Amino acid sequence: MRLVVCALWAAIGLAASPAFADEARDAAAFWKGVQAHCDVTAKKPATDLGKRIAQSAIDEFYGFGGHEIDANGRIFHFGLTEAEHHEDDSGATQSDFGHLGWWRVMKYWRALYGDKFPVYLEVRGYRGASTATEDTQNGDILRPGDDELLKALDGITNDDTREVLREAAIRAAIIDTSWSAAFISYVVKAAGVDAKAFQFSNAHRAYVYDAFATSTAEVKNESDEHIYRACPLTATKPRVGDIICAHRESKLADLSAAEVRERIRNELDGPPQARTVRAGHCEVVASVDAKARKMYTIGGNVNQAVTVRKLNLRRDMKFSSVQSEGCGGAGAWTLPAPKGAAPREKETCSLNDKKWFVLMQLR
Image 1 (tube, rainbow, N blue to C red):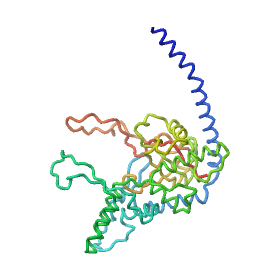
Image 2 (cartoon, rainbow, N blue to C red):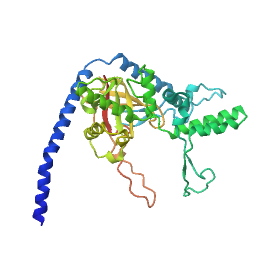
Image 3 (cartoon, rainbow, N blue to C red):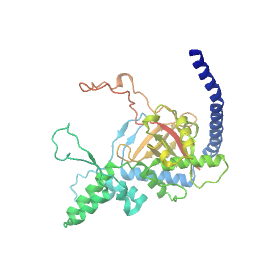
Image 4 (cartoon, rainbow, N blue to C red):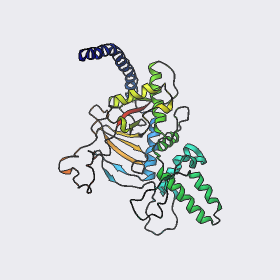
């Protein structure tokens, strides 16, 4: 019986291997074609549009006053966050709106959805949490729409009270709603790009999958209006205005960057709801320092701020897979865990060590 089973599995393997081989050859040929397009573009100077996108991101970073992360992946300057305002020791009773973190994030949402932006935000509450006294108590999550909260304020007659509560509701919703994709959309739109060329969205996957569709069209010599293509990250020189992306899918944590890219390519023809690379994060390449072999990227909602990070490039000026240094040895994390707690999983000490997998290259 054992011999029969072994023979059966051998037969299945032999029958299946040609199909797997064909798929592997197809994937290799496809990405070779994509890389050819990427290499031609990477040799050219950054375009005027790329410079405008990069400058838009830089201007917004400095306007926000967010965090700065060095090439070891450590915050060396902690700036303004989404829920705060710049401290003013003078005792002034007025503040520029640009100094309010939540107001700047609201600007990104308004660029996406106009005055209807509250409909797209989510504010969370927990039943009974405001009166609870024990940290072990449980409460169901409450998710009223932010627009519902704002409508509920219409009955308040005092203008100042109504305005304060309105701002509190918007600020809470901004804190509870991921806004990194809204930031990218704002930056690209501010550079003068229209919706035919870039899908402005509150989810990174919208324009990431579009970039893969553009690469597919190019390999087939078909036309495509989108301004970004998907390029293998570590094989392509970045230019200002490009966008790098990481995924945050725990189920895909063991896949290589190439396997994640191939998964997305295979899902392009399927329905959007079946796409599996859904949670992610993207940042604009704002500057490339060839002498230091570094590049600076700017992203939104990074530690609750518009943040710039410094990333390592290899000698060939392509993205390095090593984005952290000096994380072990005497600097290892040795703080004892709470009594009865399960051992902590191994963690990286670098905020730059993400599941980066694709360079969205400006064509």
